Length: 291
Image 1 (cartoon, one colour):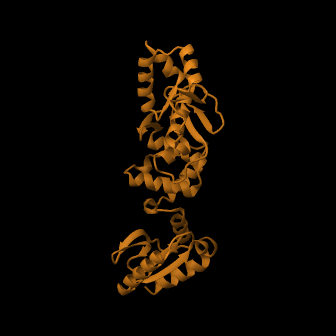
Image 2 (cartoon, one colour; image 1 turned 60 degrees about the vertical axis):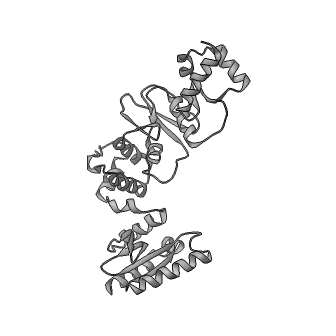
Image 3 (tube, helix red, strand yellow; image 1 turned 60 degrees about the horizontal axis):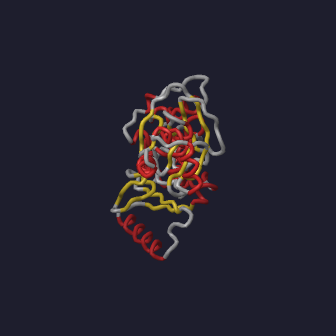
């Protein structure tokens, strides 16, 4: 195969894999070891992982790192555990470690945790192979906090996944956490937009408050938490929010409109939510009682 034609073929495969290609794929495309070494010497290929190369340039991206990890783990490999949960948009934070599952034996290396599993179904999401939604949630339970797992369940149900199909198996890592999360499942968590809103929802649960609507609309505005029947609104100011003159003017107009619609507006800072939960809960309870 002429070298130029080989480069065209390699570039085509790499383009579908965020600029990454494996040695096995190069061999399948007819590229011999001598040519691979020449391409490495001339800068057409760049080694990024054992047996995995960047094609044409070394520009990195999240997608390229994930694709390289899957290629390193070999045929049939897929993103799994917390990495799959993040890629499927069930978790908000990208994990430091890339987790992949593969039907073949493959050792873990720095920043890539390989799970050897003989039988595993996979799906595709945004051009990368990933464990099924059900498998992802069961695996995520092994590594996540209870709060993160509950949020993942809520987001999965928001996408019309029946969380009751999950099967916490006794003796399996994460099964107790998954069982607890299912008992405390709250679909409304999917509507939260920040960790602070999740924390506030947990504050309401912990203090046995009537649970609010999250990011609901009332009087023409979206509010962080709403008790519609009691006409009580809670707004939470996260770090860096509501500080500019334009933001302050908007907040003032929002509160004016809400009060005109006969709603009581309570505003708290992130520090208050984190450090003064009992005080906030007592004030909200009084407001609800008089609503």
